[in-house]
Image (cartoon, rainbow, N blue to C red; front, side, top):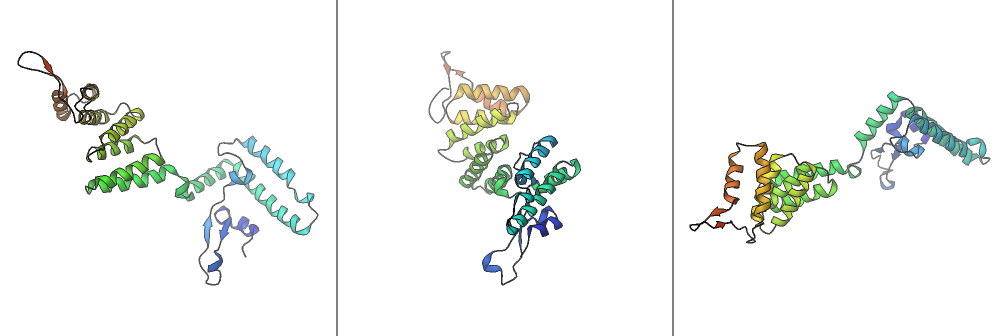
Length: 251
């Protein structure tokens, strides 16, 4: 049996050691998870040194071993007090606290890191896109932005995939607009927004985004061609004709 006091001797990487009941007889390897000293004290990661000390004093006073008469309760309180002391010592020492923070980040389960999980889905989406499996790419990019909605690149990839699948243009428009909200100075985002708005028949919006892209990429041949195609043309009698998109709207 692994005791808490053993973990304290071995250091924070061994604090929570568990063995599944059905593996006890077989000598299965132990599952190790890192205990956060912030959780031990019940404080947020950005707590100041003074806040750490205040919380430690409160918990130490409430659970001090001298408050217990029962032998088992007293021993459990002593172990808990050791852990509280270790947490306070680490979190009030800048060097040790920094090392502990790095360990927490390195050992944090993927399920607790939405951004890392989103990167995983993003990579799967890129793979599917390159293989030409655009419906699956949409699924993976959609999962990426649902887990972490601050990555403009992920929304852009979702928009690109939607352009490749019939019936997904509106979804692509929503995605590229989200990308632009996060990174409004990206010329490629505006150019691809122009493409999507053309497909949606929203030519006025397409023209605005293409002009924005052209302000950053004044010699981009693709943007110039798209802008030329989307701008109203004069008919034989001088009237202006606007090209229609898939919905037949002018924007």
